[in-house]
Image (cartoon, rainbow, N blue to C red; front, side, top):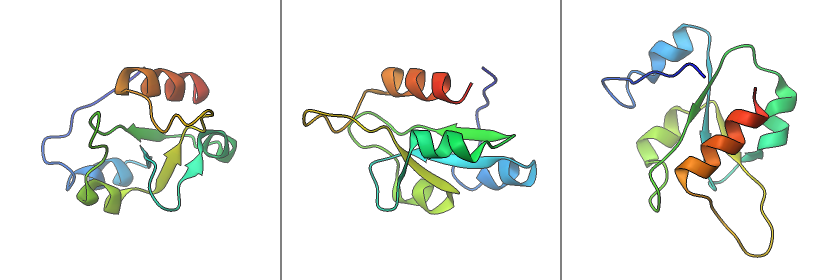
Length: 94
């Protein structure tokens, strides 16, 4: 799985977009689509963004996203830790 680290966050997200990436952040935020819906969009170049455990994505990061994405869960579970959510998202978007 290719990955990168951006020096100036979130300002340099524009570099990803300029390179043709759709930037999708994993969030429970307003307007989030499901991970299945994101996969169905079939993006050739997709950059996934994960927030910190507990806090999630910052409002500054949320503002630069192209897509807000959630992993649907049952039985009152509202979130996964970063390792688990990234594993699910990487598998689904492979």
